[in-house]
Image 1 (cartoon, rainbow, N blue to C red):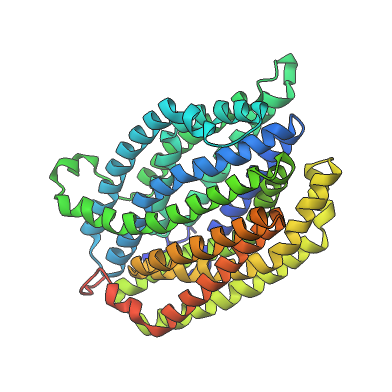
Image 2 (image 1 turned 90 degrees about the vertical axis):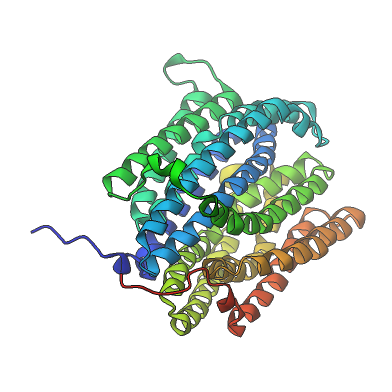
Length: 453
């Protein structure tokens, strides 16, 4: 006997939302580290270059998430309030905005990649690898952008498992493509970083097509013919939240790029170790990321229903669970730090320096979880401006400033920069906890009334 499909409210339970996002995030981290692992057998300079350009690609992801996050919050709140047609219109608007953004960013990267790479004082080989990767992945970023848009729509309706399956499948395609590009199976030539970039964009485009097919299969309404009928206020409602959210994420990304610039001045050894450290960190915080994304979706739904007291308690509980989980995970990674780093590099100096960063991760990851969970909850409730204001102060006034002063100016190196980021995460995170407990975020609810589901 076939199981009855879950209702929207059943799909909004924290477990149902979190575990597929966690599996997806974990697999994405595995696939990301596999890229670095494969490239490390090709060239350490390629690792440094792709590590740098990955941060630049993250900037494009931030711009894409400007649209998708605004749409996700409003779809969740409208679904909670029983306003299904408004939720549909928000989804349609987000697709149109994402497509336009993809075309603009693609053209910008095609013509500007060389100038962007030139801003960094990179060795000749590293700069060459970086340009090859950025010009391909950047100019053909439409697959990445539409993937993010379609996945946000699926998750907002509670179909996190479907998004996970598609993302994981296309990620495996990327790994197969990387293997073909770097290991010359069947006597094929080695295509290097260029081949890896082509593999990446191909899998992203295929993933976007499959994601759209899943949306149709799940019968999520996405009538693109309504594009011309939507009022400007619908687009603006997405962008209003999205711009604020992008401000916080953009500030974080630019701050991280500034810190990477400082580290690039310390030499290729430090930049390579930092790249390995960032990729390993993704495993450590992937559960907190999944919990935060699930919390945002559930918060939006509960706020739409105006269940303020219940979600207030739930989010604090989720934050505690995330803290304990992050502490356990980072301690396990610290215990096995030399083994883990040894899988990625045979350079003893790189191994020692990266292992030192993992020791600093005990402070970093236990602070990061507050921001991943609480900021997500604040965004789900519509309180997006406060994290932006605090982030601008903390990321730059604490993270970047301390990274420059201790890491570069005083010469304590890459570990000092790593701990500067930890200081930012802790101070910003504790401020966010206070904001959530104060209940002031309830003033920013976007949905005025509840109707029957």
